[in-house]
Length: 597
Image (cartoon, rainbow, N blue to C red; front, side):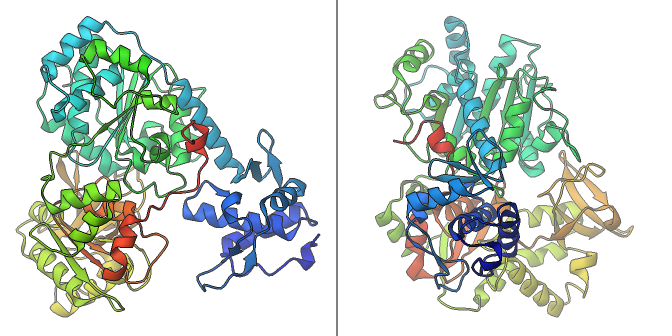
């Protein structure tokens, strides 16, 4: 055994991992090097967004603690590693308390293990049918959709409504423009027709996503049944987040019969647990999102795990028999023997009404979903009016990036008022795969700011104090102003001094700089922060050197933010491999739900 004063040098790991190792070593001064190595890997995994480490994958292999490319340690074989962890005083088995939990060949932080187990159990408990009059529901579906065949894309929206009306849990997944919001609008009409006084709540992970859900619901055909719906709010506001936790929880549940949550790919594991704890298991829960998008910023990949990590969806024969009474005959291939009962709650909308099926954006999005190498390779070799490529192999980032930004953003400074300036800015966005480094959003934003300084559009200190025409991004929720993390606005002087203007609930509101919560200039965004947003044109910046964050989920997310045009900057030699590489997070939720073979 290695005593604490004799333990190996773990300084190659991050400071957070080092601190966690010291904490574990204090709990058990006689813990072995192998147990402390596992503790370091768990801390590093948590920082990456992984829920656990899968010992079986790392066992017997060299471990690289930093970006040097040099192996710092060598992991033991799995039985030896498990034995070392079982002997460590800071590790416990499932059902017991300790900083780390060993569950089979997965090692978790205690809080992640608790959250994962709770989510799995709660979701499976919600897999229950809801009694509904078949004749009434079929008549209502006919009135909303007409009588359709399954080759009509709207048939799948009808199926999603039928599934949501007849089950406690529904997960409606699909890419941008596939009709998720249209489906929800019609579902809301049926829910209100069924029970006029039913209590419905609407939410999304961010203020921007909540605002977009509201706009989308209002933009369609209005009806008396949906006229008085509550406005969508952020999940934190829904749960009444405060310094001491959430106001709504298991002992004080949400007063709700149906909860609809949009952009669920952005929900991390901790927030999903809090949501499920607060929502009575007898309430109807409807989750909307795109399972092919990037996972949440914080730990977990909840939506991807819930929906089988890309599996083709098949429902059970029992569920199919029930749905046939509402839908008529079902298409071949929809019914099977799913590994997980959650499959009976999931419907995927695949037809995009936004992207032309023959257009390059739609083709690339579909190829990314399918992992279609020949199609991706073909699209990388050509540019057209909707999809273009800028190839680069080395630092620094090409001047074409700044030229793109100058062309799109310079007209902002000639706008007549704050509303016009906001509208111009909201059309375009530069999305970066990385936050730091020469290709990261910070460096590119600073380079663009320097160019604006030379052009006389900005002054020194503008990035800290604000300046006329400078867009800004809010970095945290602020109850006093109503601004939310992810909201974008613009500094503008309308004649009465410089103020920050935001579009809130469909109208422009302004704030003095001193009223604002933490913010940063918004010329560039990370792809993660762009989730839930749409722009006319997107410029995606990928570094020329490979990076663990690069994968098809990131490219897909950025690509599908673009309504009309996307330009992708990257290393031609790496692009195809990056777009074929999936970057799943380590988690046991997928297996715990029953999806694993």
